[in-house]
Length: 365
Image (cartoon, rainbow, N blue to C red):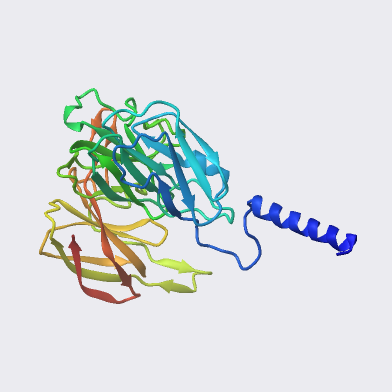
């Protein structure tokens, strides 16, 4: 082979080796809107008798270095991270506690290199002993804006006294809420837990003044690894004159120069409680912007009627309106009080102009 050809071959081989050795994000092609997802961990999820201080997380795409800021560990432990493009390594900087179940959560405040964020958090659990605490609390948070929104949970809730306050006591668990609103707290021992959602902007695990929050209506018991569902609502609070606990009559809207008047419609139906949600029931109609357009107290099994509501498609929720003020009350952090029970009904109701939508079954389940 001529010297020139030999040189070209060496250069080409060297470039090929370098391209394989240097990992970089793939490029070209149409925009990929699918967020990177976790392929595997080492040690695997739900491992027992773990002695490793380092956990490797492998993804199906390249992730941004900011993922390290989305990691949380319960019980709290100091850790460091190493970044390898489509892998990260999490190393505990202190000895793991014996016979303890840990949960490592990847929140939603990270992106892959294409700018896609995951819709929900991912949690893996492991135990340093032979037994794995497999208790879980799952639920849903409803909100218009999920930025900085976390679920905070306190263990041994049955031992908390009247001095307890989420404004003072940092939570033992803090799980980020993704844009789907779904959350799960895993690796829990059987026992009682106090659960709330809060917009924890400074990530200090307490509810500071001015931060939105919603406290569950009662403590949650984990028994044999299972618990009831938690439904939390970061509500749009509106003027009490608009929703007074009585049927609301929406004003007609006028378009352009008052040349076309939009007439309201009406609806009627029956509420059926299949889960012993319990009275007093407050039925609410919510428009696409999240605003509450109508709210009225109803009685299970009796016909309810809204005689005047502007046309549109509405989602429906129900509140156990204990104090009868026609609003959803999220509880108070100081002094501590539980919030009102709340449930999103999985239906939508379309109201048409000058038309009555009849026989709407609102089933609480």
